[in-house]
Picture 1 (cartoon, helix red, strand yellow):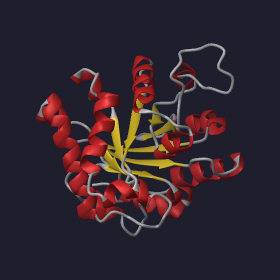
Picture 2 (tube, helix red, strand yellow; picture 1 turned 90 degrees about the vertical axis):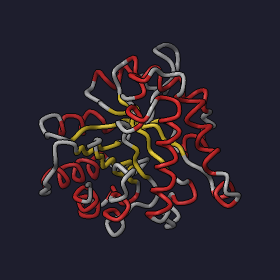
Picture 3 (cartoon, one colour; picture 1 turned 45 degrees about the vertical axis):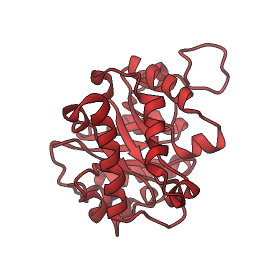
Length: 253
């Protein structure tokens, strides 16, 4: 079975002390994690070393950065390189989140560069894709998301693609309280997998974990994660509450 992942995106939330307590509480909770399960904490940059240290001896727990630079190194004040992240024990990096695309004007081409440099440094990208409300209302979401995949990922070899996790996030469902139905999530995840299969073959496509992101909560996680092409979630607000995110972790299939 494909890897099933519960990934927390803390975004720009929590003090250091609050982040420390959240990580401690989650690591102290009881789970029955299977061989193909993984829990990822997407912490803000100042907390990455702390979280990386806490999870280094915790089986099936990892840490993710929420972004990285498309540059290797140099005079880029305020930026953080993929090499830096690896050097402190970071395993994953979230790339292309809708907030980065919207607020920081990250293009598909820029994200292709970030994907490349992450892979060069043995970082696993969690590549985000998804459509805004006007695209969903126009019923052109399939072609919209397909372009995101093509322009950011399809320059990769099959072996490189298999190192990537994809997260589908309907932008209209992020922080709004709206959630795609489990059927809508499955429909888009199946479409994404079919797009990958058309380019790389079914065998490769069936190895790629595709997470759902968009108002995942304890109350709906099990139903959404139960869909055949949904391989876990990239969780925002609900990941900031230990009891809530613990339930989401336990909802992995």
